[in-house]
Every structure is written in C-alpha cells, then in structure tokens.
Length: 256
Image (cartoon, rainbow, N blue to C red):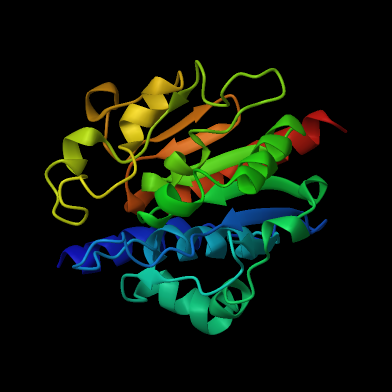
C-alpha cells in the first residue's frame, strides 16, 4: 500500500509537466559508483533509483538535456525496484542508456550546465563528497549562476564544496537532507556507523543552517535558499527538480 501511495503521489507531480524550454539547456546529474560500504556484510551504498529517475523525468519532459557524471564513469549501482515513473523513464526516456554512459569529471565543461542535481542513496557520501574534481564542478556551476539541487543524502555530496572566496557553499544557507534523527534509527548503514560522516553533522560543521523535521511544516517540504534547493526524503525528489526548473526560468527571464 505504501508503494502504491508513493507512485500515485508521483503521478500527480508529473501530470503538469510540459515542454517549457525550447532552447534545450543542460542539466547535470551526479551519481555514485560505490556499490557497498566496505563492510563484510556488504551493506548497499549506491544510488536510490527513486531519487534519480523521477528528477530525470521532470527535466527531460520539460525539454532539458540531461547528462550524467560519476567519479569513474563506470557502473552506476541503483537500489529500489523501477516502479511508477521510474519504470516509465527507463522504458521511454533512455534513462539507463544515459546513466550507463556517465561522463568522467574531466569530460565535463561546467559552462554548459544551468543546474546540477544529486540524488540520495549512501553512495554520494563515499565517492562524491571527497572528489575534488566533482566538488570543483559543483562550485563552478554555482558561481556561474547555476542552481544546485539535492534529495536525501545527496546534500552530503556538496557539503564540502568551497567557493572561490574560501567559504563553504552551504555557509549560512538553509539546507536539508537525511537527518540524524532518522539515520540513527535505521539499519541500512548500521544506524549510520558505516558512513564516512553523518550528513546533518557535516552540513552544520560547514556552516549550513540545517533544517530538521522540527523546522519544517512537513517532513517532505522542499527548501529553497540562494539557488540551493533540497529536501529530506525521496517522495519530494521530483518536486526539487520542478523547483530547480522554476528557478532557472526566473533567472532566464531576469537576464533578458
């Protein structure tokens, strides 16, 4: 029943999709190559399909080109079954074909991209958050006027990004992501003990104004602050993508 409700909620988000971007601007999605957390029981890290495929669908259905980049350009592991819109975008929108040919960081020209999105799954904490080339790409897209988006653990991917002034990207900005209060109750990463860091702790350490469940009207709220758009949990991943498009369209209008 929970899966059915989730799929129905996603469906409501996609009904309003339209071809709104005839100029075919580019969006970059960063994905992880890390499959497990390095423990003997091989707890899965990877990427959460429901946090990557729905945003991809939103971008392409609004007329944006999407490229994928990963730390190594090799296999990109996903968790979760391809239900609902994830199944649709795999079958009809070349999702797996695109992601299986992810770029390596050295092949990315940041000037091409209006936005960068990072979905959840634990993988980004292991091989994106500490990849200097990917962190530089995120910083350059942002400082070139671009939009940054994330869902769940994806915010951990840019927690360590530094701007040209030496300050962390997230400093004094409202950001949310998978919170400690949920992390320590889940067995997926042994209550967080298998992780290189807890996302909430790292964001706070680097100056973010982390938004907890207590700060939000609803735990699925999307937070927008100074061109960073984030949410805690996977049901809102598609909404993040739509809000990123709204922000890109505002910037495009203002620059006319």
